[in-house]
Structures are given as structure tokens and as C-alpha cells.
Length: 115
Length: 242
Image 1 (cartoon, chains in turn green, cyan):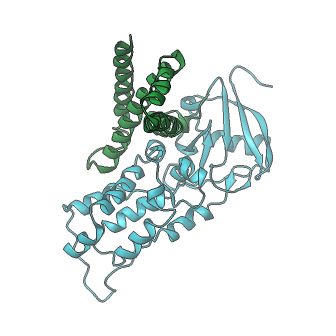
Image 2: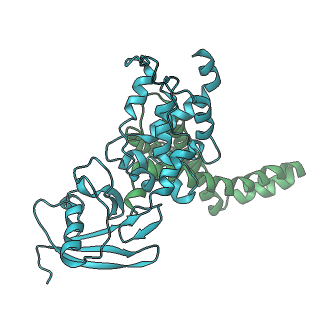
Image 3: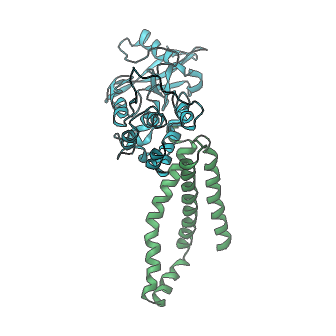
């Protein structure tokens, strides 16, 4: 069971922001390696792109979009919290659900696009 | 002997190293956690060390960790926090443990010094009292953060302090925010520089634990956000304007 210090909405939002950021940091180098394969000509890029059709890469691609959406929305929450004149962390609790909802929506749209 | 009308209370005994002792304490209709600790000391374990003074939520000295959450024990009714008839009571987190439920507050007090959270007036006793407009924005911002009694609950709740014991912490930075909004304070630049030192307000992760668990419902997280905004909008320009 999570400690009461680490199970409220603001903390979970901060955790989501941090974990999604770390996951993106791990993922993005591979993404750039893939893009860099274009420098070796269309054949090497095509070879790299053929990997994308494998289920594991499709799932990873979906995860990347969800992580980006999560990181973006939780990042906007921090900017709002720190730059707004009237909001407090208590009031920002409702933002956490909106952020998670935005990421879920992005994930669903991606699923529709993939199928 | 433990009955259906009793509480099982786990209490930390010892200093940094120690053990959990369990006591059966009679459950009553009106009973605070401080009452429970006092009953243990009076009837079960006379050597139990704990700290309290006012017993009515004014001094903040009875703050402890109850079922994982920092609280004023004198203002915490047992029925609101008891879980399956059990209470777990230990000293405040993030502070050195001296004995049993007593922790050393020196690192916490030290943050106030390091943050420059000390008022320096512009005038002396021979000058007339400086007029302060109670309706000014800066005064209202200071007033909103003024009621801190230094109980250490926010410092104990803060995970950034848990990770980095050099971090100034929410209480000291909240105090800095009141000073930087106080037109009578003469050391604005020095206080600002200390608040933005390496372990200062830029280290805050906006978890919001300080605001969530503050017993007097202050929002140090908002004060820290205010400091960040102050820096973002150009503190020097603000000083020049004043």
C-alpha cells in the first residue's frame, strides 16, 4: 500500500510526469537511431521501418504516444501551478484527472488509427 | 488483556536504531492520539519520551507521524485515523531521532537561517512605525502565508527533503515569501539570493505534500510557486520599480 504521503493526486501527477519523462528518455535514442538510418539511404531506412510492423514495435509506438501525451499534460499542469496567480496544489487536484484523460484519449485515437 | 474496546498501538522505541513496541490502550469515545501516547507513558511505559506543550493546537510541539502521516497529535482524534483498531506512532520523518517519539528539530530550524528567513527592518526604535497598506497585493500575499507556527509537519511530509537533506524545505521558503512581500524588510536581495541558492526553491517538485498536510491549511507550495514567479518575472526589475 502506498504511503499517505505518496498516494494523493498531486503526488501521483508529479510521479506520472517523472516516470513518463524517464521512459521517453530511454525510448527517444532508439527513435533517433531509426531516423538516422535514413542517412544511409532509402534501403537502410526501409529495413529499419520494416521492424515497425512487428507487434512489439507497434505496442511501443502506442506507448510512446501515450507517454508523450502524459508528459505534455502533466508538464502543462506544473507550468499552470507555478505561473497561475490563483491556483493552489489543492485546486490542481482536478487537473490530474484531466491530464490522465487526455493521455487516454490520445491512446484511444492512436488505437483507432492503427486498426 | 486486550479487549474489543482497546486499541493496538505500535510505538517506536529508541533512536535512529530501535524497535517497535506494541501496547493495548483502552479505546474511548473522545480520545486524541496525544491522549493515547500520554496513557502509554502514564500506565504502561514510564520511560517513553515524547514532546508536547499546549495540547490545544497552538504550539505544534506534539507533531508526530501517525499511521504514516505527519500530524499534530493533540488535534487528531483517534477515530479519524485508526485503521483496523491499530495505530502506528513514530517521530517526524526527515529529522534525527533522539529518543522514542522525540526528534531533533535543529536541522529544521537551521533551514530558516540558511534561507535568510530573518526579518531586517529599515528603521529603529526612534523612527515612527512604518505604514503598511493592508490592501496592497504584496501585503495580502504575505498575510496568506503568515500563520505558520514552525511545527515541522510540512518539512516532515516533503519528499524533496527526504531525498536531499540540504533542501531548504517548505516552511523556510514560505517564510521567505512573506519577507519578500513585506515592504518593511530591508534585505530583499540577500533573502532572494539565499532562497534561490543551490538547495533553494528551484529544487521543489510541486508534489504539494506541504499544502496537503499543513495543520493550519497554509499552502507553502503556493509560496514557493510565488517565489519562482517572482524570479521569472524579473525580480531586479521589480526592485527598481519599488
